[in-house]
Length: 181
Image 1: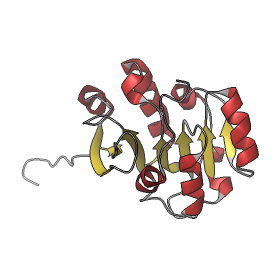
Image 2: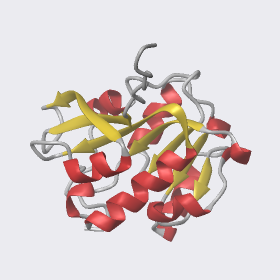
Image 3: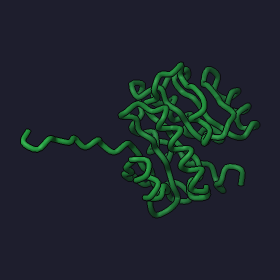
Image 4: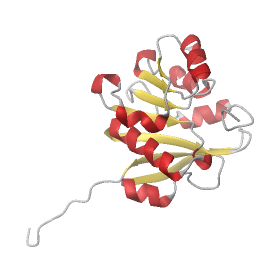
C-alpha cells in the first residue's frame, strides 16, 4: 500500500518510461522512485548519477535509495512541495520521470506536483507519467489550467497490471500577429 502497487514496476515499463532519456536530457528528476526500478533504467541509459535527483516521501525508502545508488541525489520530501526548493543549483531539469500514483491522489496534490515540477523544468522539458488506467491520469482540466498537453507514448502488457506512459509538456505558445503585418 505504501507504494500504491501490488507488484514492483516491470523492466518493460522502466524501459518504456525512460525510452526518451539519454545523457543529453539531463538533469533528471525522478518522483516516487520506491525501490529504484526506474532509477536503474535511467542510470543504464547513461544518466550520470550526479545529474539525477530522486524525490521520495518515505524516509525508509529515501535511506535505502541513498545506499543503493551512491552519487545519486535523494530528497526525502513530498513531491508537491518541489516548487519551494532549489534543485541542481538553479539549472533547469530536462525531464521528470514520475512513479507517483496520480489515480489515487487528490486534484490539488496533482496540481502541486505538476506546478512544482514545471517550475524546475526547462522550457522544452518533458514530464513522463505512467498509469494503470485507460486514459491520462492527469485530468484534462488540470492540463488546461497549467497550459500542458499530454500524449500517450506507449503501453506495455508485460507489466502487471498493464501500464501506459504519457509525455506531458507545455503547450506551444501561439504567436499573435498584428492585423496588416
